[in-house]
Image (cartoon, rainbow, N blue to C red):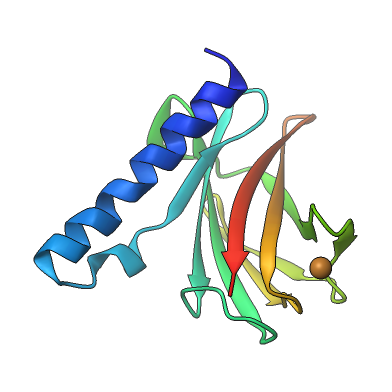
Length: 143
Ligand SMILES: [Cu+2]
């Protein structure tokens, strides 16, 4: 499977909870983490934003979880992450440098994120583990 078709499948899968929430008229979608596999398929990265959805021009935080790609319930406890975000169509990043704090068992608190313009942003989570670094990319449209 190519990376392109995998991305399409992932986008399609993300729509399902929103459709369910719309039909049932309940707010479950907001509490579901967003998940992606990393570039070489070794890890599965999820985040929850606070607040959710990610606001325009206001500080927000992410809780990031790194799991084994083959078993999403198995956290990669001795991993480390670095986080940045860019607007791909504007070729610029954030004006702030986020702070990453490991909170144990493959989870990280990322504070000091701020998206200062509306539009498409990409959050890059670089996972390092046993000398290997792989990237998970999350597309986020901020309105
Ligand atoms: Cu911009």
